[in-house]
Image (cartoon, rainbow over all chains, first blue to last red; front, side, top):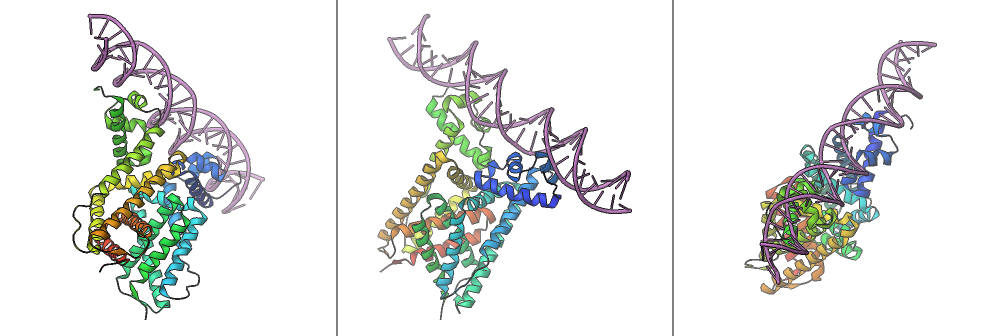
Length: 198
Length: 198
DNA sequence: GACCATCTGGGTCGTCCGTCCCACTTTTGT
DNA sequence: ACAAAAGTGGGACGGACGACCCAGATGGTC
């Protein structure tokens, strides 16, 4: 095996762990499976991490950061508020369709973190960030379209997150593309209805 | 240990498994932990079930059935459509608040079933039933309040399920009661907006 | 009261897990 | 150039797991 400094090895192991989890669930994230995915020896694992729990903490943090980056940059919001919202939802849906296993892994990791006492704070931070991110995006969308939200932005943001979570789960279960498309249609309608667009 | 016929023993083991999963997640559902919870010996397990996988299948089925019974019987829908919808959502939220670990277990089991090839059909059936149940409840709610849905009932039902899933996840993460209350307010508004109430 | 299917408890097997250890090789600093 | 530091590999450990087996206890049936 090539010689790799510890920090890079940690990153490689974290990403390998994410792939393993996407493929086989959190339960499959054994040290042996992860080092095999990363093409390392078992000893290298405990050279980079003191324990598997320490790795899992970094896995959760890394996934959260990745999710943020993937959803945030809205490309070209054009048209009215409803269309901007719809475009954002559709963008997420495409992301979900592109690699469903990864998104399922994110869900499983959230529930896993919720169960693990020393990771609960990470799960809360994750959702705090989601809500803040959604609120920010909603404000920008309103600004670009000259709209004004009639309800507290935090409430609209929470609704948006709840809708995307529900969308994710339902699509992961039945993979019904048409139903998902109609769901985001309706979601965009509902959200846009809470702003006045002069 | 008392003498118990196999069918009852199976049921007892399934319910013990649900409690174990609620307490420690799907990963904790080992045969030893389950028989300990049920107060049985390890051999009794493999007398009632041929394998742990067979038990898990019954666990998923049992949880789904329980979820159905818990949500279905709407007590007293009084007032307009919005109020009826709001009451239903609040009922579910109270259920969630009463035992969050169980609801988290349901979520984990859904993702677990989605991952296990021989349980995927169960997960799909689970959500089909949820959607059918929601549609039925929405039709009844409209009838009682003399309302008419302006959108296909299947779409409204899917939105309702997505919203409750999102509500569940967000509340499980941050346990923010006030935010959950406001979320169901907004959800009831959004759904009621898709019916004409003369 | 005897019989046979139905249960039960305890022990055992092979496997996989996380972690650790130690001899070895490679890089780095001087 | 050489010593110290950093990184690597293989193997071994104790523990928990699912599954299985079998001798014996139990309870309904004739």
